[in-house]
Image (cartoon, rainbow, N blue to C red; front, side, top):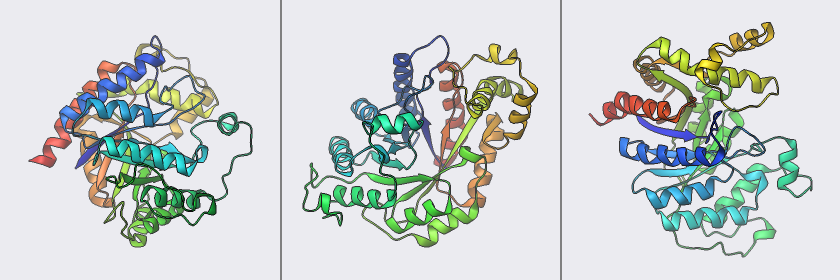
Length: 335
C-alpha cells in the first residue's frame, strides 16, 4: 500500500503556531526518510487550533529541504483565489520541484463565514460555478486557452513545466463525477463522516477520462488514525482528538489538550452522547489493528493509496506513530 500523510499543523496547549510549523517540517523530513509517498498540507483560516494557512508557502519551503517525497495542498481552497494566480503559483512550485508537486484542491472555505468575506475583502464570494473555476485553473496550468473570457489569451508563467498532479478533494457522488470527467485524482475524505461509499469510488472510475494531469484513475482515501503498541495506549492518546471533535461540533474551538487533561475532562451528558455517536471517523488501536483495517478497506473499496492524519498532543508521539505505520505498511508494500 502506498502510504501518505495529511498534516494540518495543529497547535497543542503549551505550544504555539511557530512551533507547529516547525513540527510540520520535522514530520516531512521523517516521512521522506521512512518512505511515505506524499505529504499534504491543509489550509485553515481564523482558527486558534491550526497554523497551516498558506500551504503553497509551506510546500515551497519543504521542497527545498527534501529530495523524493511528493508535496501538495490538502487542499488549497480555490473559492478564495483567482484561477490565474493559483495556476501560476503551482506552476512555479512544479518548476522548482518537477515531478514532486500535487495540486490538491477543495471547494470548502477552510474557515467560517467571516473568513469567506475577509478573503474576498468584504465582497460577496463567487461560489456558483466552482467546477467551472477549476476547469479554468487546469487549462491555464496546462498552457491552454481557457473558455472563460476573463482569462482568454492569458499566459500563466512559467510555461512548459512538468505539470503537477491534480487532485479533487471530496466525499460525494457529484465531486466523484467531476473529478473523473476532468481527469483528476480523487481524494476521498473518510474522516469527514466516518464511512466510505463504494458507489462513489466506482462512480469516479466509471466517469474517468484520461488527461494531461492523470493518465489513469487514482483514488486516495484520507483517514484519521491513532496507533500504539497497545489498544489501551491508543485510546489514551486518541481521547484529546475525540474531545476536540466533539467540542467543534458544539461550536467550541480550543487548543489540543493533553491526554492527562482529557482523561479528567468533565464530560456532560450531552457531550458523552455526541462522542458515542461519533463512530467510524477516528480509527484507533494497535498498529496491527489499524494496518489490517486499512488493508481490508483497500481490498474491498479498491483505492490506490491511504493518507493518514493523526493529531496527538505531543509531537514526539506523532513521529512515533509515523514510524509504527511505516513499519507495518510501507515495508509490506516493498517486500
